[in-house]
Image (cartoon, rainbow, N blue to C red; front, side, top):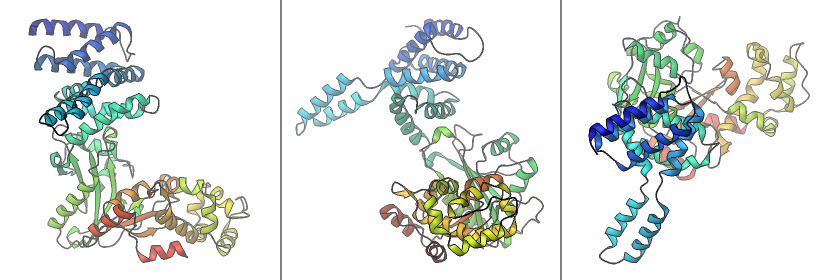
Amino acid sequence: MSEGFVVRGLRRVRKLLAEGTGPRELEGKHLGRVRDLLNECASGVGGEVSVRQRAALLAETYHQLNDDGRATFLTLIAQQFGPDPQQVNQAHADYQAAIGGDGQWQAESALRNAMRSSRLRILTQFNALPQGVKFLVDLRADLLRFLDKDPALRSLDRELESRLSAWFDVGFLELQRITWNSPAALLEKLIQYEAVHEIRSWSDLKNRLDSDRRCYAFFHPRMPMEPLIFVEVALTDHLADNVQTLLDEHAPVFDAQRASTAIFYSISNTQAGLRGVSFGNFLLKRVVDDLKRDYPRLVSFATLSPLPTFRRWAEKNPEAWRNAFSDSDLERIKRRLLPEMTPIASTGDLARLLTVAHWIKDERLARALQHGLTRLAARYLLTASKGSQPYDPVARFHLGNGARIERLNYLADTSTRGDRQSYGLMVNYVYDPDTIEENVEAFSRGGEIAAATALRRSARD
């Protein structure tokens, strides 16, 4: 097949797919043309250049589709480009027959080839495009949205996740410090992707990049302006206990050369399509090494972290309130209720009471609630589980990386989001270089949670 024939054919297909305006579904003759292009991509018809041209056209087409069209596109790849069951059965039978003989390893290779689906060949062609890596990451983000409605897509998702895990191996990633002098387009990405504490303005961002702050991100060479994950760090002389104070734009700038403590107060994954591809632990280790090199006086590395699912868990477990709040706690709370508040008769009414947004601003009532809420949060962190893992996703991340739960901080985040997630509580996880490996081993082997004695005592009291 001549190169000119292929190019002319692609032009005709591009014209056909470009008919009409706006996002569209994938059906009729358009569906047939896309199926043909996928078949040709999978088989490599026309040589490497032609295959990449087809992949570029398919990516262009995909961008023009609405959600229904994209779901059809992905279902087509998942269902029609998997391994051939008959070839797999035959290759498996040949392998079984060859075990122990001279042809065993050749039969094993043939079995592997039979199980390798055409989906991988198609995905690899997208990877070769100039923006192909970002295209595949975004494609998987779509795929994850469609999985619940179409379980048949799971095979494609597993294959794509496996490929992305290889392409985004930490050995390929580049650690960069982001500063106020970084390109404006990159700074805009920080504002867009910040997932823990909203960046409210450019002055807020500038404060987070000041001389007593650091921001580091991992980048992939094929996505140079797209941070994959970034961490924001405050250089201080104490274990931070309030995020509003930490992010106060009007607070004096701390002399970073006097810093003894680095506080990781926000870690944001930016690419939904990389879910399941883990490199956050490597980021923290690299950042710690970088900070220790620049600031030899640093001795403590800790987080000021949210408890994003604490309130949701508490509202689903009324018995936990009964165990966390004593009779004397309840009486103290009753005496602090404002006249306009609905009276409470038992601990069963506490969750309802805390739906009143202004309780956080009522100093006397907040103080009356402190003992019980702190005990409730301590028990949540130390005992609440999802399967064999801690219920809290942030706890799973830090404990799995060897951190220790050090301290609960009451009313550490009084924003609307902080109240909605955790009644304003936050937690410090400490990374002690002398115990990290021991903690990782104990947690991975038996689910043992490293925690400070004071926190364990709070859970028992």
